[in-house]
Amino acid sequence: MNIRSENTEDIAAVRQVNIAAFDRENEADLVDRLRGISPSFSLVAVESDRVVGHIFFSPVIVEGECFNKQILGLGPLAVLPEYQRQGIGSQLVRESLKECARSGFHAAVVLGHPNFYPRFGFVPASSKNLKCEYDVPDEVFMVLELETGILQDCSGIVKYRSEFSLCA
Ligand SMILES: CC(C)(COP(=O)(O)OP(=O)(O)OC[C@H]1O[C@@H](n2cnc3c(N)ncnc32)[C@H](O)[C@@H]1OP(=O)(O)O)[C@@H](O)C(=O)NCCC(=O)NCCS
Image 1 (cartoon, helix red, strand yellow):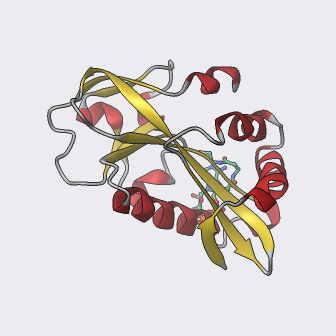
Image 2: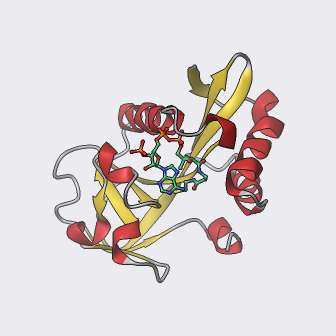
């Protein structure tokens, strides 16, 4: 299994992975809306020339105190149902976070399963004084510092790109 950046030839397959994983088109449409914004990351997991997993990152901003910090929002993350529970999602998260750190980003947030993301070091964002713009349970909005202590002077409301508001 190979993890690499998405290229234009992957676009249709990435769409199919998101539709199959979420069993709806919302996340696939979201990726199509976000693709091309800068900065963003789109990585694929490829098995025998087939795209079987996908992860996307887009920039978020903190309304409040968070001077000069570059923060990315992880999501969507999707693995084809028949390839789930084989470690592909975890590998996508680990590799992409390394890439985000290498590219100079300071932190990543995620709105997701509270039993999945803590294994990568994510903690409830509330513990770093960050709150989600959406009304969600505390434990599902998480943050990971890519540089230890980088968020110590931050606090406020994390806002995703406006494209997310159409993804209910
Ligand atoms: C979540 C997802 C990306 C994980 O990918 P994966 O390749 O199956 O993940 P891995 O094999 O690396 O890890 C499996 C772990 O994922 C967790 N997991 C998988 N699906 C889950 C779900 N629907 N709810 C909660 N946890 C889930 C399990 O805790 C499992 O942990 P375990 O091994 O201790 O049982 C994949 O299941 C998927 O595409 N799901 C549908 C779309 C989705 O919900 N995306 C994430 C949005 S936050």
